[in-house]
Amino acid sequence: MQPAQKRPLSLTIIGWLFIVFGLVSFIYGFRPQPRPAGHAGDSHFFDTWFVPVIRALASVSGLFILFGLNWARWLLVVWMVFHIGISVLAHSLEAFLMHCIIFGAIGWFLFRPQASAFFKSRNAKTL
Image (cartoon, rainbow, N blue to C red):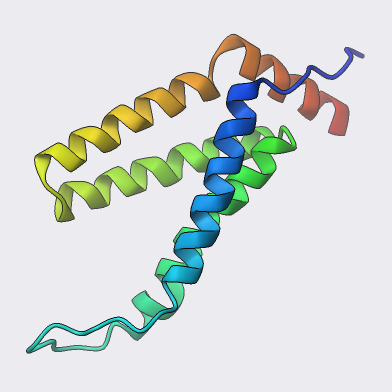
């Protein structure tokens, strides 16, 4: 069996950024939100369950990236793609392009050979 690879600094930074970002956005989401005038319909499910779960997934992926679990980097990729999809619908073209650039940078760091070796060594160790 191979010895476990040392975690690349880029994965440590990404992991901690997403832990903090996820926790801050999760907590921030519970503050009272003003409703627009003429707001019709009940978005209780969306506001109460869906949004907090999506925000918490950022922290979950960041935490398990630090542990070197391969599924966590894929969860982060899915989370980012979902976030980009939302930005297409709700943000300006500039914000969408910025999200795409950030996604590209994070994706590059998550799938570099050093990162892949780290995830492979950790997953082989847990099997």
